[in-house]
Every structure is written in C-alpha cells, then in structure tokens.
Amino acid sequence: MTIYIQLDSGNVIRDAITYPYGDYIEAEYPESILPVGINGGWWRYTDGKFTFDQALYDETNRGQGVPGLEELEKQVTELTEVLAALLNI
Image (cartoon, rainbow, N blue to C red):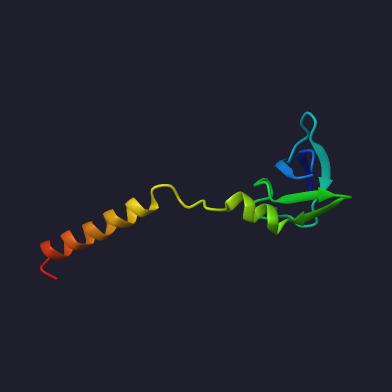
C-alpha cells in the first residue's frame, strides 16, 4: 500500500496520508491496513522500514488517562443507585 508520511528530525512518523502532499515522503506499507497509532508519534520510518518504538509510546502515554473519566464513573454509580431506589431493586 502506497502512503505518504511526514517525519520529524528523529524519523518519527507525525502524519500518514494516502495522497501526495507537500514534503511528505512516499513509502510502501506492506499491508492494506495501517496499524493503530501510525501517526501517534510512536512509529519510526528508517531505511524503508516501519518500526514501533515502545519507549516513544510509553513516553507519549505516560500519566495520560481519559479526561473526566473519574467524574463520569462517579456519575454512573450515583445514577445506578438512584435507578435502583426508584425501581425498588
């Protein structure tokens, strides 16, 4: 599959698209479906090869949770309790 990728100075893929554009580099990806996160900042393109970089992944995702998840979980618990009380469960 032909894709066009934008790299930073460390050969980290910053974007991947399916059409030629600006300074993007043409590259052949061996499968028809791109991997999740190909433009997430944790894949490298070096010497014609795509490689997943676990250290970049860990650095990018360190300490990041879903914003507001704790509050949402609290609201779900409260609503479940209210529904149970209303339904006499």
